[in-house]
Length: 298
Length: 194
Ligand code: SF4
Ligand code: SF4
Ligand code: SF4
Image (tube, rainbow over all chains, first blue to last red; front, side):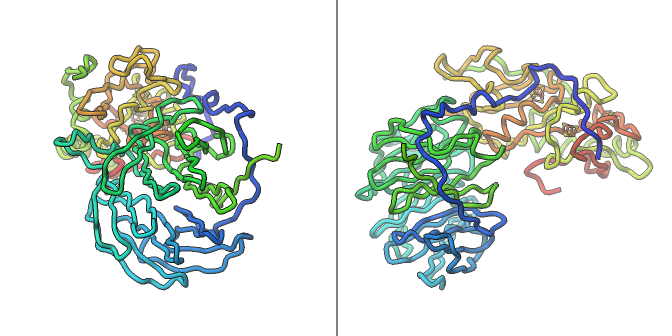
């Protein structure tokens, strides 16, 4: 391999994000309390149970860790998992590229739902009392199913008759989450905002705006991931400037959980979860670990 | 409807390849296979960049024996998100308060204004490279890799490359990205099976 030789290009040819990566330390209200190594080469997604057990999907399966970070269960899935969500009864839903698989609490496969077609690219799942929401970035649609896998509604598609412009999903990041009382929230990443819909697919309201500044969502398509805590606060992660932030239940910026300086260059795919203690779990694919952030004491 | 007065209508051999994206690239490959075989070494190979290995060090712009370099940026349109706020097109600090339809030169990331932007529909824009202006510096590729889908990458353009025995960029490449490829398949295009 050649030795490093300077290109001789002028400073206008330098690509420099260093100023944009800076975050005022006063805005960072969280600190890392623990880190759970996933033991995976390519961890893709996380979910946390009411019992604070941590589920990590990736490398062709799912690994389960107890609240102390000890591995307690492992099972294979029928392909490469993209996303994971948990039902109230311990049921595990795993999203593959083009379909959903359902596993019982012991990791035994209970069902594999019908495929969504060649264009499908499933990126996120959210499970409510009686509904399972499946975000399909490839088809730019959120699908609502019952827990048996029966399709009930297609949400977010373009509909000229209803003046619905359709979701803008330029890259394979399209997240869905349920808030308190089952409020349905999804990310419209190409519009850099978070949108609320009824279960029947009616748009209700949205928050979020583009900005490279810390209070906005940066780049072409962000946030990449979304989680909602018990008080309705939104936790978001972004790519380009990898950062994790908290917005209040009306979408007003509150604080930073982790700043770009906390992540290696090129980190993308910061899946999020919030546990019953309000701790924020961040999947860091570069470190191949789940990093757990808590509020700073001071 | 937004208009785009930056579209380049010059039709040259080089931007014919660019305008048609990958499909046009394939046509060029087929159409020039015989010429490339003639330009290739006795083993029938030519130089090409592996986009997965390239780290956009800048040397492609300055180490080629040709000026401008035989290396330019290529856009795999089928990987592109057609984003309104493309951060391979806009400078990293760009804030769109003043509107995005006719951005000032300072708002554009490419130092040579080689990236052209055309409104398609809704919030979707098409980005193409004017290869007469592109010097292969790789700056836009870093923007796309950071914020977008990684649809931009560098390639040795074989209507320009003279296929030196010892490619002087390959010698200066810090990531071993240059390799010999068959002259009848001279491009390593992202999003395509080779
Ligand atoms: S930024 Fe550099 S590589 Fe990209 S289009 Fe401009 S000159 Fe070409
Ligand atoms: S082989 Fe010669 S002309 Fe072609 S890219 Fe290398 S230095 Fe330039
Ligand atoms: S010299 Fe190598 S690493 Fe540098 S821009 Fe060219 S191909 Fe990429």
